[in-house]
Image 1: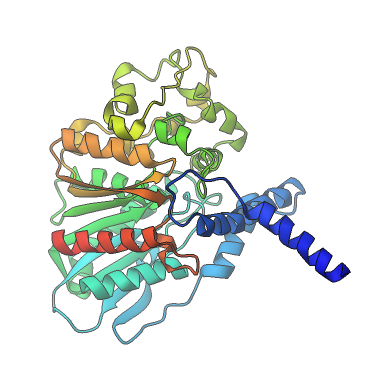
Image 2: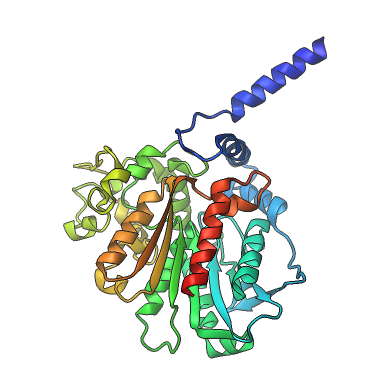
Length: 406
């Protein structure tokens, strides 16, 4: 009897911890709750270890993710997998066996807030392996350096170096890649890097080969407004909470994470900040750039006065290489044809939708693929035991778009 009672208490406690009220419409909410409980547990343990001085919070988090997910390069009957150095950056290569002699090529940047993740993770390995097989394409997944050991612009420079090496005649010839059929892609923070690389290289007229496509999966693209309609609507929706995103930004930019409340209050982008003019604000004006049916009735949060000196302390908040949404129209107009995936229940939804609008205004052909039941990270989680149907659908549609356009 006592054993049953103890079991019931433990089960009730576990259910209480796992249960999280979610918005109506989220795909398979109990799977998302379980996934969030796992991620939240590791995040909280990392915070405790950091507070006790055991280790830096990101180090423990990174160790757990690597222990669970990182796998060796293993070839299979259809795809040869190898680890190489591309432009001085560790990269995992997936090359189909057989098929066309000259193949399409995709350079991929993983997500993880510029601090977590790896090309060697099981989820990214599986995604790239499927892409290689389904598309008969060479996929190169880049392992750029991570925070806190590396901070901006290290991740960006690694991505740029790998991109230049990927587009080089030597690499294209070695791996049998068609120079007319190359794409840069990434998810979340990797989508940020892919967008930044596409902007930089498309303006480099000395390059004999250019990316023909950019495919961005729920990308993070701006730092100035943490009260977009999607940040407001989804601030407490897993797995990317609004507060987490502010911390990831500060880690990436090498800033003190104690500034997170300043960012979350939009005090860093208040109207009394002399470095942010009306032209800059127009680039992140979600009330104009995001369709009304998606932004709903949320109101803008703009502070008259804020925290002086924040932009001086963290100048990269306005660096276009870190925040590609701040690019000028003349730069956007040179970038390649685009695919942008967004999810309704994602704080980064409006970042992607604003970029869609600005790219189109610059004359770029864009496919906007929005999932009304999607959440942040859903495509990568298509391979986990808790995979969701929206993860599978989004991955299939992403690969289908590449097949039709690359």
